[in-house]
View 1 (cartoon, chains in turn purple, orange, brown):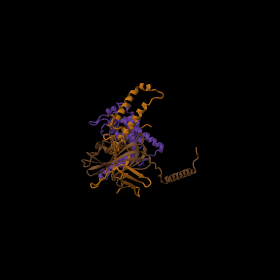
View 2: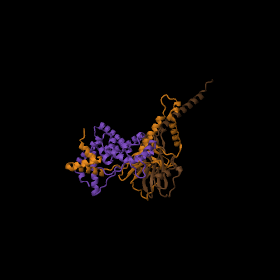
View 3: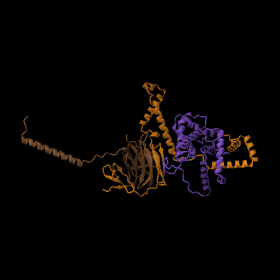
View 4: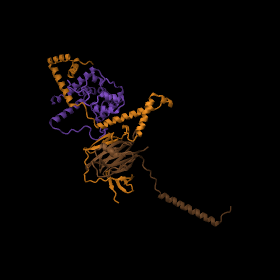
Length: 207
Length: 216
Length: 176
C-alpha cells in the first residue's frame, strides 16, 4: 500500500493554488502559466523521460506538453484536477511521438543522439561521483530499477509511474491514460510481475 | 481478455483501493494461503523499493531556458493568432471590418501594442529576444547555462568553472573603428579611429586564430 | 566655306593623330593600372561587441554613454541586473559586419574575442549565428544563437582581479 503521499493539488504554504493560476491563465496571464510550468516541469519531464528514454526528446516533449496545455487551457474545467489534466496531455504527446517513431523505425527507438538541443553543453544529468558503501548500493539499485522500468512497454511503464511515483488513484490513472479501471489494474499487475521477475536478485537485497 | 479476479484483488489490496470489508476478507485469505501471502509481501517490497528509488520529479536540464522557450512559443502563437484574426475576410470591405465584433478588441490590442512599442523602456516580448539555442564548452570543467533576464532585457550565457585570469595579467582593450579582411591570405586587420593598425588576426597551421599586435 | 590651307590641314591632322595616340596610350595605361573592382562581401548585418570589466568598485572610468550604441545607453544598469557588480568599465569595443559567406571576428580585446559565422536570417527577425568565444588560443564556448535587435547577449567570462570580464554582443543593424 502506498505510504502517505502529499496530494499534488494541495498547495504548499504561501503557494498559489493551481485553480487560481489556471483562472488567470484562462484570462491570458502568461506569468501565471509560467508559475504552473515551474511547479510541474520536473514531474512532466520525469514522465516524458521515463516514457521516451531519451533525454533530448523528453525535454522537447515536456515543452510540447506545456505548449499544448496552454492552447487548451481555455477549455479546462475548473472542477477537475489540473495535474491529472496536464499528465493526460503529456501522456498523449508522448504516445503520439512513440507511435510516430514506431511507424518510422519498426519499433526500434534510436537512443544514440549525441547532439543536445538544450541550451548548455554540459551534461544535463549530473555526473555521479564515486561514493562508498550505502550510497553506492543505492545508486546501483536506482540504476537497476531504471533499467528494469525501461524494459516495460510504454503502457506498463506509465501505469507503474503514475501509481508508484505520482501516487495517482486508479480513476486518475484511467483519466490520464484514457482507459478503463480494469485496464489500469491489469497493467499494474503485469507491470509489477514483470519488474519482480527482472529485479528478482536485486530488490530483495535492497536496504 | 478478462483479468482474473484475484489479480485485481491483489493490486487493489496493494494500492489501498479496497474498502474495509474487502480488505478484511482479503487479509483472511492471506492468512490461509502462504503462497499468496509471500507474493503480496514480495510485491509490496517491490513497491516500496520503487517509491524509494524513483523520485516523483526529475530535474529539468536548463530549467530557466525551458520556461523561457515556452514563453517565446506562446508569445509567437499569440502574435500569429492576432495577425490571423486581424486579416480581412475575402471580399470584405473596410466597413465590414469596423462592424466586426472582434475589431474593437483587436484594434485596441494593436494600438496598445504600438504604444508600448514606441515606449523606449518597454520590455521585449519573448519572441523579440535573442536566444541561445545550444552551446558546447570543450573544457569539461566548464558548464554553460543560458537564460533570459527580463530585468536586464538581455539573454545571458554564463560559463561556470572558467579559470580566473591572473590578477597581474594586463587586459588591454581596443576601440576598433573598422576591419579589413583579406580572404586570400586569411588575415583580418583591425584599425583604430585614426586609421592606425591595432591588431592583425591571422591563422596558424592548425587554422587557429593568432592575434598580433601591430608594432609601428 | 573656304577649304582649309594645307598647312593648317596638316596641323589639324597631326593634332588629331597626337590626340588619338595619347588617348589610346591612356586607355592602355588605364587597362594596366586600374584595379579590378572588388565587391564587398555580402553581409547579414552588423554587430557591436564589447569587453566589459565588472567590479565591486572600479578605479577605471565608468562606461560613457557616448561609447555605447543606440539602444544600449543603459548598459551598466542592465549588466547590474545580471552581474552583482557596482561598476562596469568598457575595456574595448568593435563594430563588425557579419559576413554572409565568411567568418567575422569581433575583437574588442586580444584577450577575449568572438568568432561569428552567419547562418542566415532567423524567422521572426534577427540573425542565426554560430559564435565561438575565444580566450587566447582556446575556445571557451561554442554556441548557436539567434541575435535580435535591441536584445543583447551577455557572456559571463572569466573572473579577473576582484571582478569579471563580460562580453556584450548586440545586433545593431540587421540586413533588410
